[in-house]
Image (tube, rainbow, N blue to C red; front, side, top):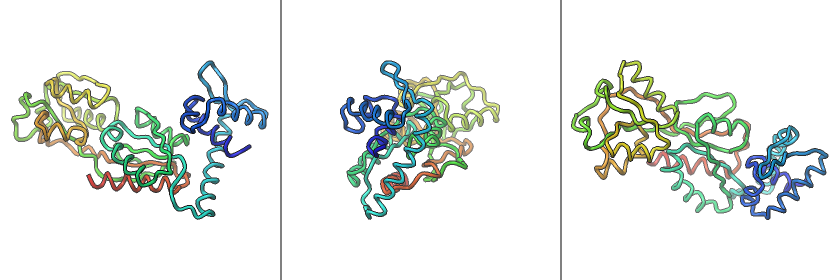
Length: 296
């Protein structure tokens, strides 16, 4: 087995797509296929099931994935420590929830790439918090940025950064916009504009239920941008991260309500596996992300 073959296998095992693997690593697709085939021949087992354009890891492939991750981590660690290579380099796979992807990650990634051009960043999309945490546990991503209730985990390192400030918002035409303060009872009869399942939605709904507040109806939307458009169209009220709606509030297109609701305890947190080696690249990303989020 060669390090190059293991790196190609590791990427292919994460992506389950040889074309995408070739694009990420900068190889021709034929080179990816040839290296995977050579590795299978060397080991005497089939690592992938080829199902048309799709590939799926075999049991042998899943077993090798764990070893490949450990071997490549140790190889990078040895290179950095023994070779005294203090400049971050290599590949870093990251993931984040929608709010961070849209409103925080662009500035973080721009700053990081300017400071550490030798690090190749790969963004792995995911929708749900549980899905992202599962990807970390499986070693498919290196670090994740999420806003959720404080999490205690036996398998993950959790770094709390700061509170995620939430904003209860409505249109400038909504009657609630004229009130000096809003209690949970004032939401009676209002339509709620909700994101897909997440910690702050769950906490908001539980709080309303606990206070016996009955809303007119609920409309679930796929993303925060859609929610903002519906708020401006006076379709209801929404509780979303303030960073996502700050510009619209400043421009007077959306009204932020002075809400006397309970503290939902939503915290911006970073996650990585407890057994993950903190490479110079990972350590640098953690520092840059922390600096940006704390400064806002």
